[in-house]
Amino acid sequence: MTDLDFRAPTDLAEGTALLAEHGPDAKVLAGGTALVLSMKQRLVRPRVLVSLQRVPGLAEVTPHDGGLRIGARATLRDLETSPPIAERLPSLRDTIARVATVRIRNHATIGGNLAQGDPLMDVPAVLMALDATVRLASAQGDRAVPLALFYVDRHTIAARPDEIITAVDVPAQPLRTATAYLKYVPRTVTDYPTVGVAARLTLDEAGDRVDDVRLALAGAGPTTLRAVAAEDLLRGRRPTTGAFAEVAATVRDMAAPDADFRGSAEYKREMIEVHVRRALQQVYRSL
Image (cartoon, rainbow, N blue to C red):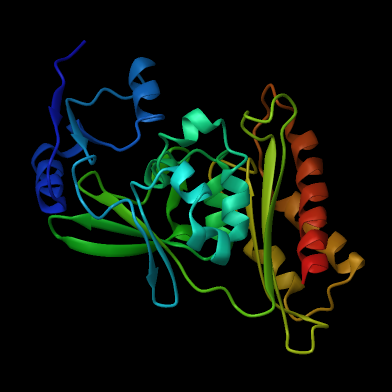
């Protein structure tokens, strides 16, 4: 095994300078639940670990532009028990409460969860449906990437090796809006889902037509997937059972899940269709 240099910067500038110096040989360490496992499996072999534990200001949940800014080092347990998350983003809280175990949620961070780029993760799908944006920092400056554009391929994200995820911005949600996340887990409740569907529905002022909609999927392809074509099909229509079924069939046809021990590709497409329809019905009933 190669020698490993452990660095613990005390501010963000020092951390980004270390990444600029070491490039792809460096990896950022937050909670470590995914990175340490990948290192044990020799999937990644960094020469330098840059820990964020001593960097201040990365674990808070604060108001921002009418929405919330979630620090990247906030643990999933922090968010599960956060009053602002419970008040403004209950669908995110409810989803996080069903991720893995309390022991894992006490260590896993929101930034690490997004950085892993695993298409089976629950949280990215919900945040994508909520129109979240990822904040990135480097020695060259800061930038923001909409989560819908953040995933490039399996375990590949739109962050450069010299960038650190610092926060996730979730905007204020529109009036007359509800969001839900449904998933199918065939074995234990702490397992990765076979499929997961996040749906956000906004009704017009009269409450009889769909003003806006978001559909984000886990387990439907090599990345967390936003079903834009299906959203366009529903926008402006009456929120009927028939419309939801038509949209769900469209999502099924556009999905490209992998066959694995959780099921065949065709089985997963059928499950996606069922869960899209159920998720839309659930959010509509809650409005």
